[in-house]
Length: 252
Image (cartoon, rainbow, N blue to C red):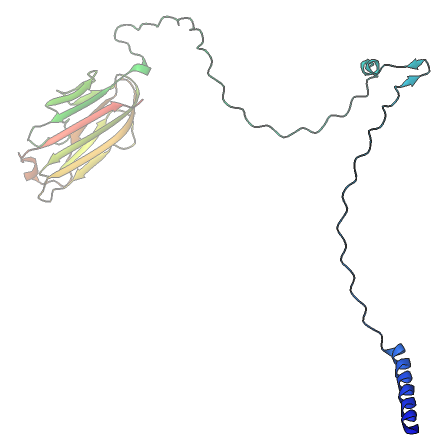
């Protein structure tokens, strides 16, 4: 019995020692903060305040309408502001009404018979040689048909153009033959070199063309001639079909 009592005392002492030791070293973990609660509802609006007293001066109250009509002194003029950006272009307006017709112009001037205004002058020709004979060397080529000859500055019988209106002209020719041919545009106007053209047959139809621009004074003449270069004598005796076209007209 005494042994049991001693054991109980020892267990009580041990329990006290253990409890005293845990009070210092055996603390618990802190807990987490709680969640915030929801906001409360707004309160009711307060009552409307009382109307204020009207303005008063030393002479007594002043009507507010009278104050609004009173004009103060003009202030100083402010500085000019920065110019703004250019605006967009407006839409095109509707067309206006037609204007009043102007007065008639002065009467035109008439020219004497045979005289022409240079601004209205015309000169052009196109002639054809259909003769099958070979054109003779160094002689004016003559023609059998005038397709155009306005106003008649080309003499088809002599094969010569005579300038009536001074200006710049263009002349050209085209020939077709079965033999070699050489043609030159001749003029008595002062030029550095007279244009000459040759083409030699290789046993098929031959086409020859040439042209020139000339500045002429009234009275200058222009014509076309055949000349000898490397053609053989049988060429001049050829009577096969041939065609020569000579053209000219005033440019300005």
